[in-house]
Image (cartoon, rainbow, N blue to C red; front, side, top):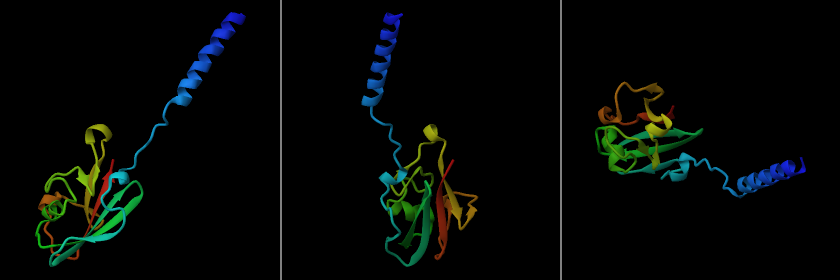
Length: 134
C-alpha cells in the first residue's frame, strides 16, 4: 500500500512540475498586429469618408481621404486591406476562416452591405463599418 501511495505521489509531483513549468497559453489579441489602434486620418484626396473597424469590443475610426471612386480600391491603395475585392486582413488584423470561422462583416452605416467593398462606390461623407463577425 505504501509503495502504491509513493508511486501515485511521485506521478502527481511529476505532473504538477510539468504543468507549472509549461508556458501559460496566450490568447493574442487581433489588435496586437493592428496598424492603427487609435482614431486617425489617412490618405490624401478630395473625397472623405469614415471606416469604423470593430473587433474584440474595440472600435477604431479612420477618416479616409482619397481620389478613388470605389471603396475597395481606396482601402487597398492605402494598405488598409490586402485585396481590393475579397480581403481577410484589415488594418493589419488577419482573420483565418479555416481556423476560426470568423470574417470581416461589411456595413454601410449600420446596414450589412449586399455586395463587397470592391463594388461599393464612394460619394463622400459615408460611414462604413467593418466588423469582426463569427
